[in-house]
Amino acid sequence: MSATPKPAGLPLFPLNTVVFPGGRLPLRIFEQRYLDMVKQAIADNTPFGICAIREGTETGTPATPYSVGTQVQVTGWDMPETGILHIETHAQERFVIRHTRTEPNGLLIGTVDTVSAEPAVAVPRDLELAVEILRHIIDEYGDAHFPVPHDFGDAVWVGYRLSEVLPLKLSIRQNLLEMNDSVTRLRILTGFIRKQIN
Image (cartoon, rainbow, N blue to C red; front, side):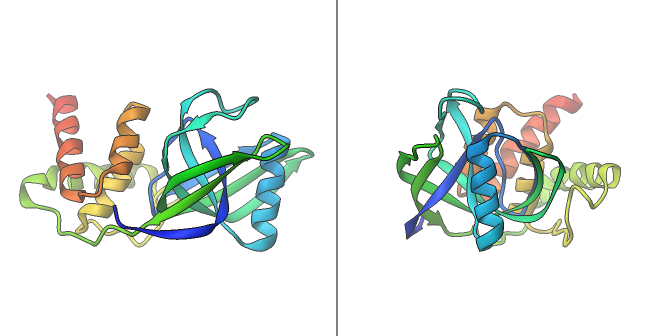
């Protein structure tokens, strides 16, 4: 993974989920430390990082995150009731956590290196089943869950979207996020799809 140093600390939000670059993730925020973090991100138009939890839970004592996560930008928000914030986020680039520190309110701040985006790669012919399955899923769920543009010819985009929606274990999703080989990722996903179909 080639990485660019990012000197400023990135606020981290450990969750029981993995978000992939280009994806959308709606979140419901109610813990004070994360309400403060999101309000700051909205005010300054800055990203925060989402990382899957390796040990611990989403609430209470700060969880231990996996070292690779994804930066997200808030694209919309609403506060239907006091103390609960609903936000829409758009996932950007991946990052690697080098160090973390915990703020007095329990918020984790990471010193991170940004991972450069994977270059677009054509979907190999023997993996076109993955594209076919993804088309069916998008037809069923609609563009709201899969923002346009759709790039069915790009193994990176197809692999990321399938990694989000297929019923995979958290640890497998995390491995797929950490991979830097879009064709290998798609090969693993196609193998999983074939097992489900047979």
